[in-house]
Length: 430
Image 1: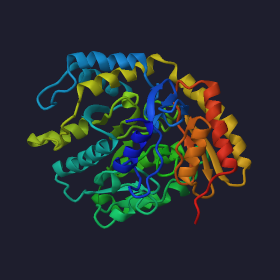
Image 2: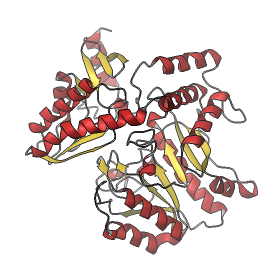
Image 3: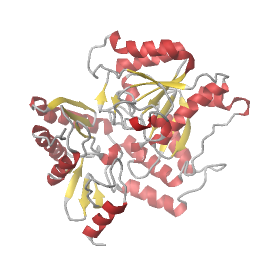
Image 4: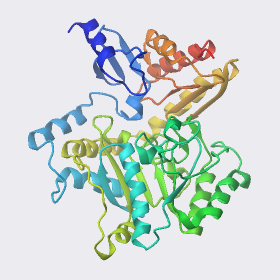
């Protein structure tokens, strides 16, 4: 196929995420990628501001990660994890146990972020089932959250303003408190936790766990909230004997300036979900970590945890992930993230004066311009590509999460494009 035939076939037959098959969004064919740049088949290069949906923290075509994949291919690309183990899984799990907050020490390796959330939910429910508490089958979460697109994960996404309202009648029904209303740097007031506290007081007898995205609500609106909110949630869970699941899929591995976002609050969950940046964007892999208490609780009296993905513990993905984490630990990643945050704060702040802009916020390597009205994504996407950058807005949000290796001038090209679009945005027609 020539370039146009490739695009034509794609538009006719390939279903991309969150798109229509009768009115498909334009696609841009990537021929190769290196560093922070995507090279299109037509010769254009784009600076990637999305890190391939927040995963490619070291950029593309990194020699160490390439070598890890090639070396593992020569040994074995996959072997079933039932009754078998291998060094890549052990090496990766050792790193995860060492890096995550105590007392997380049991590691379940799975396929993707949504699956790790499903695993976390099942762990919580099966734990209480093993304790004879079959009544604890509900979850408590907050509005404006997002945890994935599988059914268990969808059931704890925002039921009104999220992407899954059409499934309301078939999804399990859980409890939703108001979204955290306290900004990251805002002075704390107990009023911010009152609705959550009330929901927990009224329903704790049948709640198995609380599930939250710590500090940053990602796809639900790129909202940053106070670490004190998370501290109070941990205290309330402890008070009522409720498990706490933290979804660190988007925030883990340095994205917010800490290795894990819960470290801003100085707390640890009972169950943690990680994914996305786990392999540096090379392969799909996720993990769910939990404590000895929960592992032993599920396993008492001969109990076994009832989940087992076919590609669980995939050696190829595990070896890349272990190398990716080691690469991060060898790097001055905190300094790089801080420099990116400082530059974005300085450059994006100009947008706060624009008439169509509602808010500008930055945390770690997350830079957000929130508009007053939803943007026309098709038009905005083309305008970004014409400016030589890959930025994918959604709803009212123009945001970036660049790779940590981005250079100052490359980041300025991203922020300049964001400012230009925000100053005169192509808005959805009502």
